[in-house]
Image 1 (tube, rainbow, N blue to C red):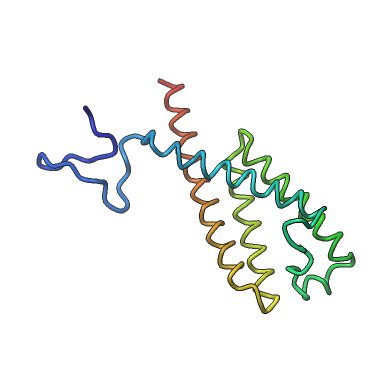
Image 2 (cartoon, rainbow, N blue to C red):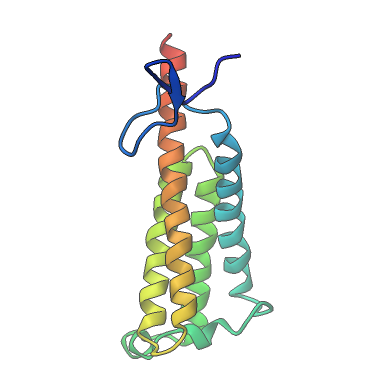
Length: 156
């Protein structure tokens, strides 16, 4: 049985070191890719839809006073616009453009974190959003690797 993603050096098998490339894409990474894809696709869709119903929370309370002063619309109207963006980003993650959608979700989450930081509270939620943004970045990288592998297989 051949062990994937291990490097043989002087007869010993070991995991690749930091910065070393894997010879092949490990199929076990598919489970992580699917988990991230579903979570980062469905989550924004659900929260985007909830911007119209406020069942999960009162979304307007998370809007920074700075943003409220700049915007010429009510917090409710602004959050409904936010909901549309979230729904679109989630759908793109679930489409064939997962890599692009995951970058969109990453930037969106960082924007939300900045907004939360400027409220003067919700630092815990800002940190959570940054961590989820890291997951979105991981999804983009896994998607790029999958795309490269698919292209290589089609060319062979």
